[in-house]
Length: 114
Image (cartoon, rainbow, N blue to C red; front, side, top):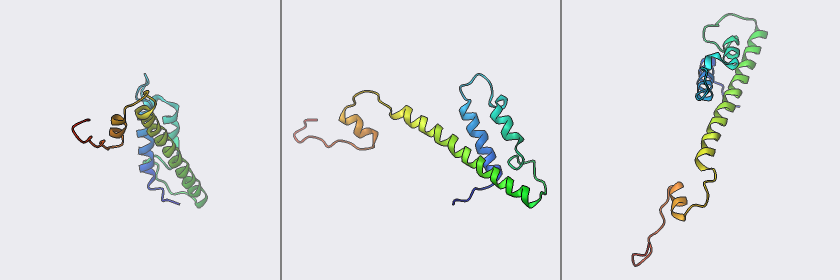
C-alpha cells in the first residue's frame, strides 16, 4: 500500500480540487457543504493538532485514508473530464490529424506527392 503523505497535504489537495470543481459555479467554493464538512473534520485541518488517545488516533488515520481516497476520486474525475473534452468524437479526422494527435508525422510520398 502506498504511503498517504501528510494530512496537511491531503487537506490542501482537497481544497484545490473543490476550487476546480466550483470554478464555473456562481458561488465560491467556501460556501459549499463539502468545504464546511472538510473543515470540520478533526485531524485534517492543520490547526487541530492535539494529543489524543490511541483509539482516536486510529480513527484519525482512517479519516485521513478516506480523505486521500476522496481526493483521488476528485482528481480522477477532473482529469477524465479534461481528456473526454479533448479527445471525444469530433467526427471523422484525416490521417494527418490523427498522426498529429499522437505526436507523429506521416511520411512524405516519393516524387513530391503529399
